[in-house]
Image (cartoon, rainbow, N blue to C red; front, side, top):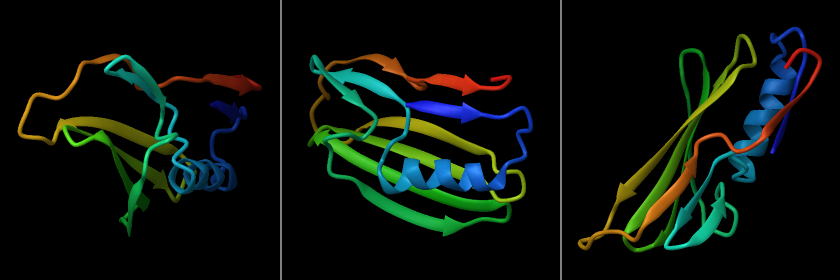
Length: 117
């Protein structure tokens, strides 16, 4: 994923656009390998979404499971005053057995472009 930056980071419109792309399409810029298979964000996974408004903006919780033993979640927050978007990725053993091998976890897998990234 490419995140376009401007010298002025106070860009609410761009923040809303980034939040929507990340939450509606599951395009959260992280990647990992699970049992040898590479995943880029939530691509190829059945995604569950929950939204709520917060004091400072909007929050989304995205979840998916590559199999019955692993749950992958991301909480994405839009700061409605400054247009800043942040996210946290979680991996949870959701089964009764040990999950498969999780490796090559990159919580940001992308590049920054623009003026003064």
